[in-house]
Image 1 (cartoon, rainbow, N blue to C red):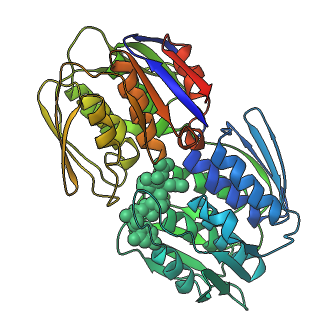
Image 2: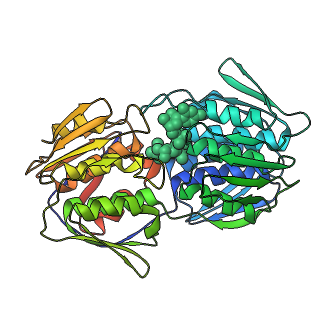
Image 3: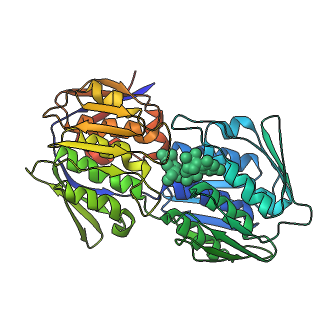
Length: 419
Ligand code: EPZ
C-alpha cells in the first residue's frame, strides 16, 4: 500500500494549477446518462472516484473515453437499469445514477449506498424527491427499486434541510419530467450551478440554481454538449491552507475567489494574506504568526465541512485557542486524534473541537479514514518538524489530482512510496 512521506519546514512558493471539482465532475458524469448524445467534459480531474464511476457508467452501457483533462461519455442506449451493490458501496456518489436512469427508462434498480466513515448519510431526501416526482419506490434486499410507468411528473419539492446530493438528484430527474418542478430550500453550492449550466447546455430548462429556489421546466429530450467542470473550491482551499501553514506565497491558478469567501474571511482574520489576482488567487504568509480563529461548518455560502479538517491543521499552531464546530456530519473529527499524535492539543466535545495552538508539531506516522482528513495530515506534515508518514493514501487519491507533484513543484519535500 502506498504512503506519503513529508519532511516539514519548507515554505511553499510557486503556482498551483487547480483541477476541476470532483464533487461536480461526479454529478456531471451521471448527467451523461440523460442523453443519447455525447457529453464532453473538459477540465476533467483524473481521480480514483471518477475512474470508479467510469466503471459503473460502462456497466450501464455508456462508452467512456478519458484523456488528460477530458472525458467523453456517450450513453447512446442504456444496456441495463441496475447499479449493483459492489459498484455503489465503494462510492456514494454512484447513487446519483438512480434519477437519470429512472427519468430516461422509467425504471431503475440501484443499491443503497450504506453508511460511511464521516456519518450515517441516509438518502431519505433523495428518495422523497423522486417520490414527489411520481416515482414508485420500494426498498428490497438493500436495493431501491424505482418505477415511473407514465414518466416522471413535475412537482413542488420542499427539502426539510439543505442537502447537496438530494438537490442534485432532484435536478437530474426533474429535467426530463413532464411539466414544472420547483425545488425549495435547495442547496446553493457552486457545484449545483455547474450542474445546471451543463444541463441547460444539453437543452434543459433550469433557472435559479445557486439560489434557494430552483425552477425546472421538463423537456422531452436532452442532447450532447461540451462543458468545462468548475474549478475545485475545496482543492483551492486546501492549497491555500497548506501555504498558510507552511508559509510562503502561492498562486492558485484558475481558482474562483467568490467560491471561497467564507474561508478567505477566516484566513484573513488569522493573519494570512489572500488576494484576488489576474488568473487566480494569491495566498501568502511570510513571517507573521497565525492567529486562532473560531469556525463553524455550514451549507454554502457558509464555511464548508470539506475544509474543516484542513482548517484545523492550520489552527494547531495558531497563537491562542480556536473552537471548530462541525454541523453537517456527525462524525467528522477523525483527524483530531491523528493531529494530536503530531503534538497538537485538541479536545473534542460532541460536535466541537477545541484547538489550543502549540509552538511545534512533530512528524509521526499517521493515517486517516477519509479524504479531507488525510489531506489535513499532509498540511500538518508540511508545518511539522521531521518526517510525517501518511498511510492509506487511497483516500487522498479519491479526490486530489497529483497532490504531491503540485506541492513538490512549490518546494515541498514530499514523496510517495510503495511499502
Ligand atoms: C456532498 O455530500 C459532498 N459529496 C460531500 O463531500 C460534502 O461534504 C457534502 O456534500 C456537504 O457539502 C459529493 O458531492 C459527492 P449532503 P452529500 O446531502 O451530498 C444529511 C468529500 O469529502 N442527509 O449535503 O452526501 C447527511 O447525512 C465529500 O468530497 C440526510 O439526512 O451531502 C448530512 O448530515 C464528503 N438525508 C447532511 O444531510 C439525505 O437524504 C448534508 O449532506 C441526504 C443527506
